[in-house]
Image 1 (tube, rainbow, N blue to C red):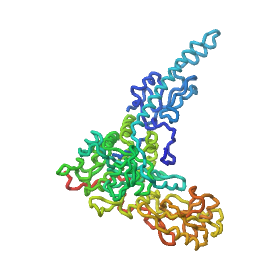
Image 2: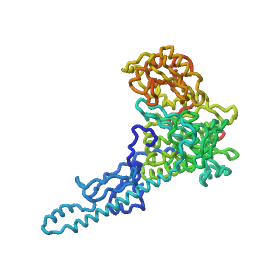
Image 3: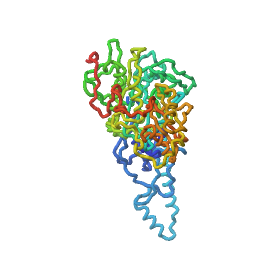
Length: 627
């Protein structure tokens, strides 16, 4: 997909319509010519074939039903089925196979060919009428194929047009691109946003709060989905909507209005009203240092319609629940103790419930959302209730109408490719977590990121380390520590080393003078040509020694050895012109390179990680809300 830096993903020219399992129901009323001509279109069944038919915006189409083989070819002289306009990949398009090789050309009854041969053998027998019949048959079939292909293409375009699209990032600066792993793969980060917009009668009915009808929407649900570079694991981090943080400058793409960076802190859900979802993305990047590739946003009505299309998601409560206070507050959700499949408005109520879950805070609500997401992913992977092509079509229709996505993700083909990437991860390698938080000293009803623990969690995502602990204590694959270069190193006094200070982080400024400290250390080790870079450089999580070409690898490893750094920190990079030491946030003080501490690559307990395969999780019900 476009910017989804996927590895081993689906081919870009595949048939999105067919891959989604769409059937003849897609073309009802549009392609009677197909039935008349008995021509088959990709994704369409022939006569006698059987068939008929909050996740917060993240849908995952399953593999299609097996389709019967084509039973007809194309006679000589029939033009190739026209595809979509130039430049498009042509969903639903296949090249008709040539007649022959045991196939009978459409328009000819069995035995026509031998009879024609016999007629042709008779002297003086005219062949023009037979050829004219074949020509008309071929022309009719060509028109049939055109009609069928056009119907499929227009439906595909219809789904694309359903999608609302917005710019990905409307802030002033971006987080750095992630470093590829040893195989050249990079992770994929998607921000999932749940909007509380009351911009329609349906959203108003579902959301209540009549006084806010038509007002600016708030981003009440925010989840960062991280898909690892090797597609082996996935992490999802929720940020409570009551989180206070600084919001960066954002520019509304529609009217050009500039929203200055906030001086103090604001609730994170206000980012959506400062130019749209692109400001929510910009805020996440500034806080976490994580580069976000895409966003997907859904509103109240979208959650309901998609939940109905999916057909129900199992959730559990440890006691009878009724989320309603004496003065009428609460989601109104009413469930019996145990597991219940919820859909539609009950699904929305589950995702919005605070009163009745745990301590009634937004933190408890985040846990309930994690349980719902885990159940949703398991159901989609198992294809439960979605085996019918008509149900898949309905899900595609509801999903595309419900979603607002960034411009690069705004097509059915891109969404399908994304779903295929997500399907590579097994539920037991999926981890749901909540951003570690503390009660805000300035407002006891709000929370703030817990300084050390939140940064620890964000670092694991930046470094592409699985939150389930199965990556061990090493980051993404890197060169072996004993992999010494065959290139001989020059004398240290001849090696020019540029030292850059990248010790800053999203929550801390760079350590002043750190580059000069390391220059002094290198000079004492004999690297007299070491100099400090006076230009401002990007923050780096890890210290690394970079070199541009093979003939300098030995020199770079010589620098690593002098500083006591493992050879795994030496990397080839096209972004440097000579041996370059980039000091990261992991080495902010001292002359000795720090060794990783045990447990550094595990999420803090305060993240309350939940494994995606845990189908025994049950929400704790506040005794004041039982019945």
